[in-house]
Length: 183
Length: 236
Image (cartoon, rainbow over all chains, first blue to last red; front, side, top):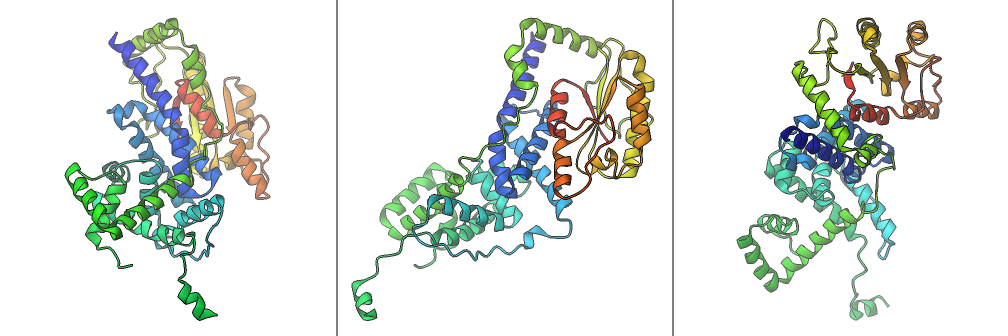
């Protein structure tokens, strides 16, 4: 009976792995900005996870474990595609000049672009927390970094993204006195 | 607006991320009630967080199924599970470790335990453009066919990314060897990633593959299907 239970467990795990595709895809897309690259990363992640599922000792760590695999696939991809560029040196300043009252899609596009401008570490951290919903300690575990680094990356990346979002605020009510002085 | 001090800022981040301990949270909630500036900052952080999440809300991966998994999950009968159990017991009994082979663990050659199991199924995966690896793929394939041919071995060589150079007529130095293997053995297949070939075409490169090479599906899909079917996977 124990072996049957273990067989069923393994099947259940495989089903969970397959069921993670969309969640992984969102994060992979935020990291890469390219739907085809994101799709490849997710496929590779699923493939590796299916292949190594027997190595997973704590089933409750399945989700975090899969994102660790995704992160490793992403690192490999970066090594293959941009071997001479240190992605952490990429300028994070944002030149987009968005106007207030923009449409939802415009804001979404700007947010995505702003995420892509973040250095890789910050991008990974903020998306794992805000999109995938992991806790600080889980992200520290997935990315193999201290929890303090998670917090500082989060702080810096949100500062950058807020600059983008602040461009979309509706204009502040300007005082009548100021308008009069213009006239 | 005056900038928030670093400590308060961190506490606010932890608050919107639901990382605060109950005591710290209650302390902050009181601060939020009394301090408009902190309240505004918390609201701003929450808004940023929500936009990030929302920006990817509707995204879903392509509808590329994991072949084999869903179907089997729906159609598995208790008999199948029992049969699987028998096979597993036999395999364990024969001392088969059950893990995939890698090049590192079999330096002198490939050893598949076929004593009490069904015919071995092996998938060789190549993704780098490297002549040494190409030679190794051919060597391993040939070895498997010779060594386990009488056991009904099934071998598939799957190439993607740089490994496609192995199966493209424009780049392969092994055209004759691959053709010969395909002609001489019914139990060997060479598969080139359709998506990789499509990318090469878009770049204006010649993506014609050697006669007999199958190029109808993405490599990742095929590998996943085979892995879920229990094939032995070897990355070269």
